[in-house]
Length: 77
Ligand SMILES: [Zn+2]
Image (cartoon, rainbow, N blue to C red):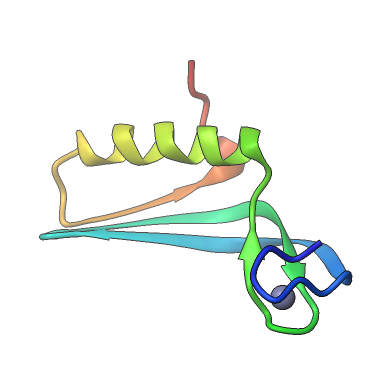
């Protein structure tokens, strides 16, 4: 179920997750998620969220202005 508009119809897909900080943009491609067919919002399962958090923390340590990474290629502890 969609947590934004509460419609029942969601479809599985992958999306690009973008996080911006003050001077840094992190782009994570091919993140598996569910997309709401009604409002178009995409949301992630808890384990995906956790991995995303770790990817973002790792990416911030790269200290470059733009980090583009692929969810499928990231291995996090
Ligand atoms: Zn929705």
